[in-house]
Image (cartoon, rainbow, N blue to C red; front, side):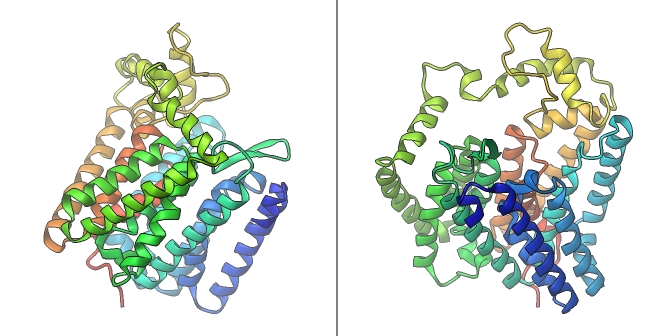
Length: 416
């Protein structure tokens, strides 16, 4: 992050990925694959930020190395993935990506579906021993804080900026992990961060996490974080006081931050979202354009869809026939919703499979909450479902929510 702060993202990317490969390799050689995977997950926000400056598929490769190393060293760990149906998810995601490659000739098209599944698998594997998962989550927090400092003066939206003449990052890739961390400081008594008896620490952690989340100006991340905290206030009586105290102190901190230059940017983006003087298309950064085009596309979509990898081409074709669409369609624009993406490329067959998966997860999460009082798996599924409305959700950050949503399928979450 120091190299990033000095306006040299290429150098920062080289240092980050080479060090991660080196350290992960050392841990694997020493017989500590859990530590290798923990390290990879801990640095996910930085990996997603700098991937274009090194090797776009580096995130997938690092997650694959960590997961495979753990399974090879401890074959019984595969049982966790078998119970949670990750093997089915992995098989289907590989088939989906390979079909995309065959049809488009581009190996990177839809490759991030593997990133989503690998990230979720990493959460499940590390959750077998909560100390590793807590360490990885703490690492994500430290990484996000370092990124925030490095990019503080790089642009008006924290998590992205202009460095060395080029744009870098994406606010939602920065905001989604922060939304998860904000929820984790409150949910289930802080057990996922190993902070069960440290209420003050949890509240104090929620303040900088919440501030960074607000400054990311990622509306989708705001929605996920706010919904998670609201569900805790409504459904988790043991954590209501902590949630209320965290939100109250966060509100005070926000008032202070609004007096800074960063606060001015936050005000500007808030007005872009909530001002009554702006159109729906302007408030949603053009996402409403895609929803207005979607019914016409859906009407013509075959039962099996237009085919994996066809999403950008289909949007360009149909948006060209609607004069009121302002969202640029040239250059291969992806659909901004996972539900749209799946419906267009795989039709009713793929959409039904995704809906059935999410419904099964939600029912399983609800049952887990009613039996044990643990609400985080339910928040994981709810968060992923909300993310999928506003973005494609095919990335490692979204996979963290998916991973928590899949935890109840496992026989236990504490590990030995």
